Image (tube, rainbow, N blue to C red):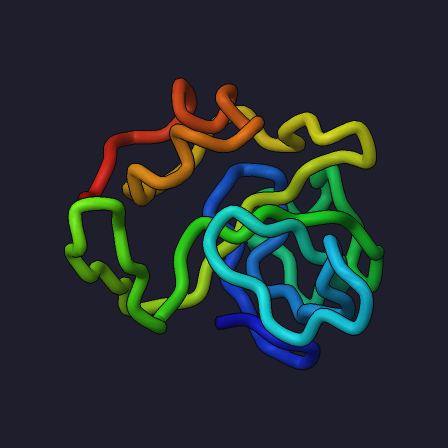
Length: 127
């Protein structure tokens, strides 16, 4: 579960490396976000190779989609999956992906969201 103040890792090639959660969308006074939710983030660090040609700037505010959490995620077949880190992917204000590639695998739960472009760009799936 992600809440305000949580540090996340960015797993796409948009240029950001570490971000901080500022707000959880989709609800009135909503506290926690899970896989598939949209949050507002602030960029804290950039990737070294993409520092000058980055699509994002340090300190900038963007929307992000959560793709991995450390807390367990229950699937429809009653299996529990969890990852070793909290990760997100940057999206624009019109819910388009900022990056063109996604590093690492994603949970299968994301196939049933409105972000189907994310599925085709990713490397693979985990239950």
